[in-house]
Amino acid sequence: MTDRGHTDLLVALHRELLEREARLQELLDPLVDRDRLRGPSANEAPAGPGDPIPLTEREVQILQLLVRGHTNRQISAQLGCTSATIRNRLGRIYGKLGVMTRTHAAVRAVELGLCRTSPSETSSHI
Image (tube, rainbow, N blue to C red; front, side, top):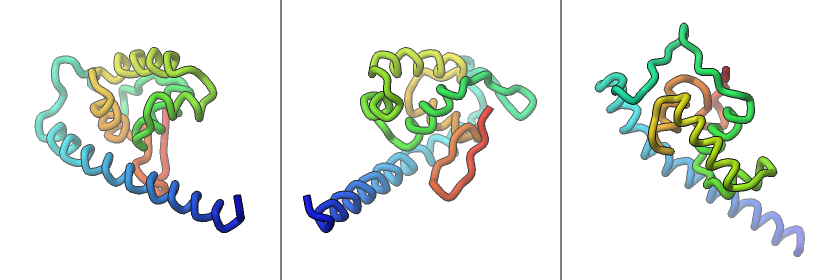
């Protein structure tokens, strides 16, 4: 592959990642707004600044990739483990966050400041 071809591929991949992030943000924004108005539901573990969620560093890494729209397969490839491992860890993460779905986990992670939603924001994690 030529340098030009390699550069074009990188630009295309970067563009695709930005588009995925934008699509995920479009899905997250209404959910975040709705949840702010609704408040916590019975299946959510209430968490705030005084009530940290005990996530491991690896769980935070997984959540960050999930928030960016990566699939289990993509997350496993990036972290060097199997898709089954990611599926199992996500189950534990969902339990800790008090959520049932992937999208709701992403929303809660952003709400709690566990993950950043764009490259320009800083992340703080527990």
